[in-house]
Length: 87
Image (cartoon, rainbow, N blue to C red):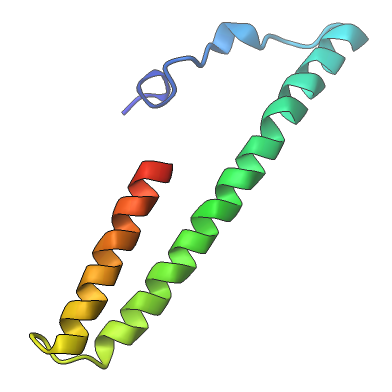
């Protein structure tokens, strides 16, 4: 997929060669305005990945069809649905 398909609001025309200090500051301001959100999303995704790694390790010790297996399956499904709502 192309950059435009991934980020439809992205415009390469928005960022042209820097020719002034004001333009440089504008780029810095744009970056800083978005960077905190990026960090927050990255942190959230890392937590989700850790949760699923833990689920995976716990699944290894369960017997398919057992009550413990079904409980873990239900809990995992609930967690996935919650994360889909958040994301």
